[in-house]
Image 1 (tube, rainbow, N blue to C red):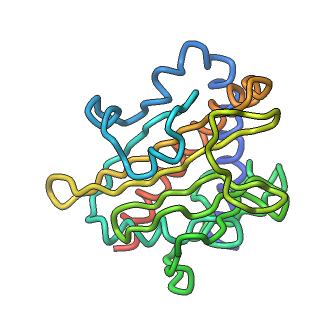
Image 2 (image 1 turned 45 degrees about the horizontal axis):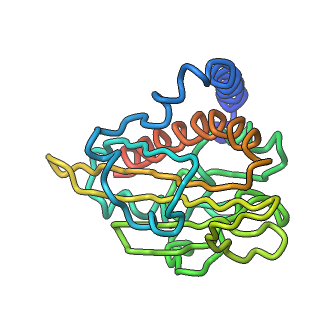
Length: 225
């Protein structure tokens, strides 16, 4: 049995409890979780990918310091995705939704050549997915939401028809003091009016999963020296 197998049910329970708590308290916690870990200057900093959703209705900037240079953090970003390296979050929760996520505990050399235009899935075919909009090795990975049926990247339009939504997922690596890295994650989201409740419910769930992802990346970098 892999070492992580025995702790996964406990982690899944912990994740579920966090999701429930943040959902319940989200009206009070939104200001905190949408800037988790980020410095005031980072919240205002223009980042690669911002222009893909130029007038966001919702969004966040989160950050974490990882005690390693960007070249050691980058490989974990380059392999994210369902059917790839996973998302380093609560696999058990994701798989309750049949996402079929299996997060890697090592760098996978065969998945390091991520290119603009590549597809990054959140689950099997038909589930939400992204296209790679920008790759700058060891600096930036920008994803743009794709239509789950056609798998084509969504284009921004100010004239939003019913059912329209567009979201970025921006990962930025910045060198920090002492040879460390600041990993910034930003999302910018616009949607048609009838989807407002969907995204407000999704937002706190996303925080719990993404916080775990950031901590999971840091742990993997530290363990794979």
